[in-house]
Image 1 (cartoon, rainbow, N blue to C red):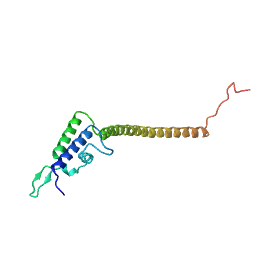
Image 2: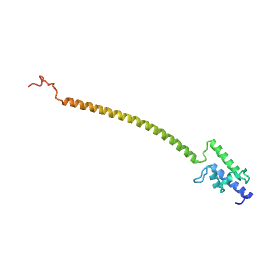
Image 3: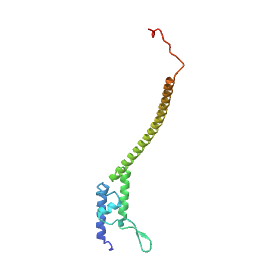
Image 4: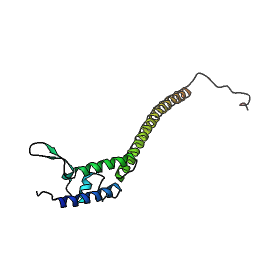
Length: 158
């Protein structure tokens, strides 16, 4: 791969700064995020320039645009600390997390209600069964011939 000339490097740095300002202003490309990958794609440079390089002797040196990556990360952190949302996905993720929490609470409440209703159903069925048994016992008792005789009263006489 050919080395960057100073002219190319200056042109790329200018493109990165323009892309950085656009991204930090919230003007994200479709499908893009507020990250180095989107910054590199928007500026038209490779992402590897943002990361440190390894010399042949094993020592590391900064990438040609690493200082811009550090600046982007710092500015993005400052915006987030100030409460600004650069990436609308962050707002969406926060909203979805809140919805998930609310839904979990509703599920717990519904589970408690179902448990109470199940207990009530068992109690109601057992009471109905006991009442049914009592009715059956009384019906058999009435249907049994008994030694008691009914006497006619004065009203019943002709």
